[in-house]
Every structure is written in structure tokens, then in C-alpha cells.
Length: 144
Image 1 (cartoon, helix red, strand yellow):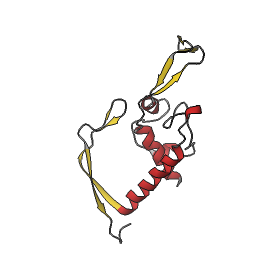
Image 2 (tube, one colour):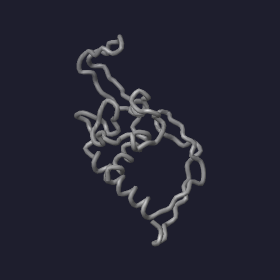
Image 3 (tube, one colour):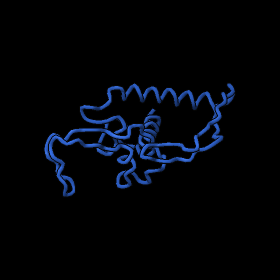
Image 4 (cartoon, helix red, strand yellow):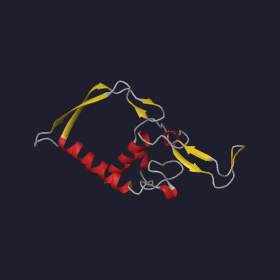
């Protein structure tokens, strides 16, 4: 199931539904010559972090193999699909299991063909302005 969880991490890296994570600066923070005073609100945009070319080679490419040999659970300053720190989502593992079950059923029981749309726009989240239609059909018992 290692590749399945690499696939899931790459999916949530590219298509994270959380546009922003809000935090409060607990003390003065200096960043690139600017000071964020204690008490100020700070917003982190995970989709922007997840598309950082300094961390992810070809960041717009879907490449589950980029997670080989790395951590596939938890959060870091470069991957925060489920939050981080004390506010790390308690449902992360359940969500990943649900995604794994869905992927298993999709891959083993169905064939799919894109039939319309598919143009991607990032604002910073993932959107399909022309929609994205997929035709599903059950696999015959002789297909694998």
C-alpha cells in the first residue's frame, strides 16, 4: 500500500481544498526583513506552499514517486495538507483510509474515460471551469 499512500499524498498536495490556514503570532517574528508583531494574524496558503518549485521539482506535474523514501504521514513546512502542529487534523488517517478504499474500488471495479473538459485553473485551489466529465463503466469479471 506504499504507492497508494504516495498517490494520496500527491493528490492532496495538488488538489488541497483548504485555501488558507490561520494562525496567531505568539511572539514577534522577523521574516525577510519584516517584523510580524506578536498577536497579529497570519495566513498560510497550503496550495502555494505545495507548488513551491524550490521544494517540488516540476510542481504542477502529478508524480506520486516524488514521495518515495520520504515521510507519507504528518506535516512539515513544505506539506500541510491536513494542517500541522497542535492543529493537525485528527481525521487524517481516517481520510486517507477512505481515499484508499475509494481508489481500490475505482481501479479494480471500473473503467473510466474522460469525455469532456479537463482544463485546470488554480485560484489558488483547483478548479475545472469547463467542468470535467468522466464516463464510468463496470469492468467485466474477466478484466483486471
